[in-house]
Image: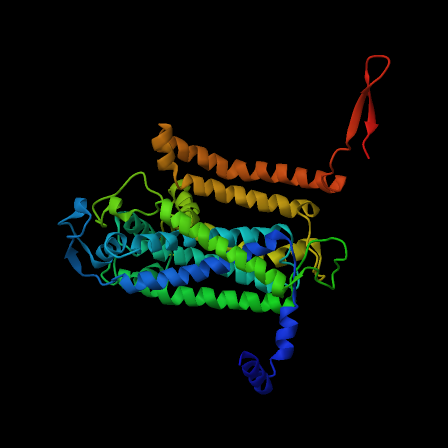
Length: 454
């Protein structure tokens, strides 16, 4: 019956030639090419768990009095958003497990994108003809960060409320259009009664659609342009050496998907994350310390904490201090990342098409810049939790902030010099070679002679 149906379908659509060609498509065997697939599986898990959460979450701004199973908050007035998240965590079967899987999947999703983009950067996979896919990847990374931020802001707990208040201050710091941007995002002055509803729409409909569209464009371009590959025996600029899509690569990909799902379920089951019942509902008059956001926006929080207290008047407009670390700095960083393929092409005068990847040591300057950028981002992220570190290290927050300001300038410079020197030396030596194995044999004089082991 299946064969007759496939034959019937092929008679009308002529799909057999396409399927035969597609199933024989070669995929490189190197493990680093599968980093991107982890992101696809995480996104699928996010959609599945997010659908369950959306069906049980109430984004309406109404206030209710909590009388659920969590006794410490019994009788506390809170928003329906917070109350429904409490119900998800304590009253709905498997609600807490799915909520935690969803949160862990979001963290791994962004981490996977950054790891994948780092591999692309350090190996030069963004060079002609793949500049468009690099731009798509950077846009995908930005959307994933926004999606994560809007998601963890939905429960209307104290921690997420503080984060939203900071985000609103950042939006208001943008000259000329800041007030309009704030009203567009929140539907009024913070905390607006329309705030949670707009976040819900953005998180559930707009950003997932944008991410799905960018993933589709990314995969379509990869399919059209074929994969890059590392240098090796039989690998040239005009071929791709690897496993066929079916059955070898399909089996590996399914195994990776199952492993990703298993790890996220284990994390969701055994590692607590975002316990909003400990934070309590958001109150504008209450703040909590120590506090820190999810790791992927920690670098923005760190930039705000380290940013200079500058406020200037320019052409009749006040530009407050949050603008420089939280708007200008990210705009410059993302701008450089978007334009990097064209910057490197201009700097190296290399306009050729590349299908073979560079080894990391092959481009010392690029390697040094990449390591310096990651070091800078690490410093900002670490600074975003300086209050937590001060609590455990028994030092003042001001002291740690000063140290991170120094690190923000010195750390990337030192990292660049070290990475550049290592890459250049490795390139000169032709890579890392194992030392020749020898056998030591005592000689007549009491010393040792070396005999090579072949």
